[in-house]
Length: 194
Image (cartoon, rainbow, N blue to C red; front, side, top):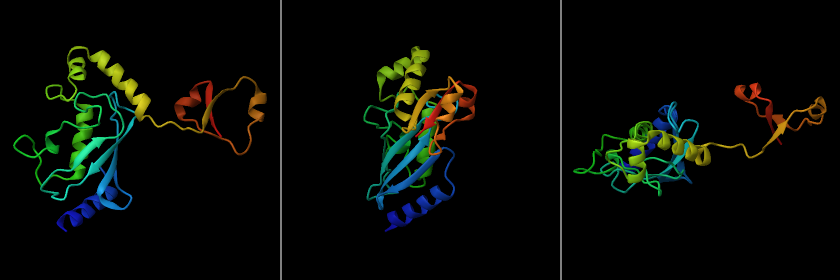
């Protein structure tokens, strides 16, 4: 009972005052299964990406930490291919730092911080950790590529169209709308959503 009332309070707080770049919600009305999204931080290789996480709340919560993993693939030394996260706050003592005073919001904020500041000395992915330590430009390139491939939201209803003549403008119907950001306005290529 304590678990359910605490989770309801935490979810209310997360929806009313979410940490910047973080959102969290219940899946299919189940209190013990949550999903979260973390927006990649500015000036990181994850910038522009939206990363989805799965959160499973154990029966003994808050005396046992939630199980969290990334559903969105991410190139990171502390996150493996299955999405498991190497973070002290997600483990019980003596190896971990979980305590009942922590909550889902603080964990998601810690994960967001870990994305911005990887810990190569405690990796889950030794090869990525080695890259981070000894060939950072290659690490940054690969992390940006993975973010672009897996975490950047694409508008599936858009097609690229170059404006070559004024005739092309007249062919647009009223049902089409332009999906242009300020940056795209500067370019010659437009995205037209159908």
